[in-house]
Amino acid sequence: MISDWLKYLSIFSVIVPILFSLLTIKTDGFTFHLFLFLCIGLSAELIMEFGGMTKEDKFVVFDIYCLVECTFFFWIISSYVDFLFKSLLRLFFIISLPVWIICLYLIPILFFTEIPGIALFNLAYEVVISFLAVHVLLKFIEGEKQVSAIPAFWFFLGMFFYCFTTFFLMSFIDSSVGKKIWWAHNVFNMITYLFYSISLWKVYTKGSFTIHQ
Image 1 (spheres, rainbow, N blue to C red):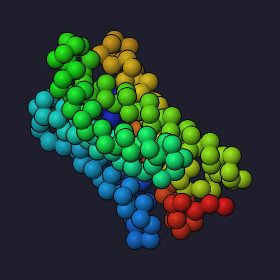
Image 2: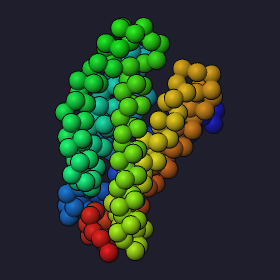
Image 3: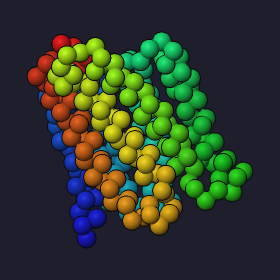
């Protein structure tokens, strides 16, 4: 089926930015962290898809990866926001683990909701990251003449695109509409990896993730 092909393309398309990150992993500190993050994501996908795991075990892997993803996004975006947002990000960073635990184990029990707890966690942090990523992108646009030449611009564009589109799809989770359009998540993943690849190529040609014109 087409959806299966899209799923496999989505899983293995992350190899492109991983290979690009190897070009600059020795010269740019951010690239090393992004390389690790992408490898963790690929490993999680491979384990869930080909590891012969039960549905419950797959959920465990997915839940842990979501916490890793949230932590990485909060960490990288903290270097590009104003002081007020930095303080908020430190707070979010500190409470992300407790909130993850609450969403995963307490909310479904206390409120008897059918929505998976991890979906609530993802919805919350993706809204925050989307807002902050837009803030960073606007700072680039206002302060630079050629934002397309800045590696960080493309990375944050990918971050915003991923979080916003995932938030949109997650809002339909466990509905008939959500099941029909979930294949789009694979397409959105591939577009996100394209943005990351452009960012890493810019790092290779410019020499630094944070370089400005």
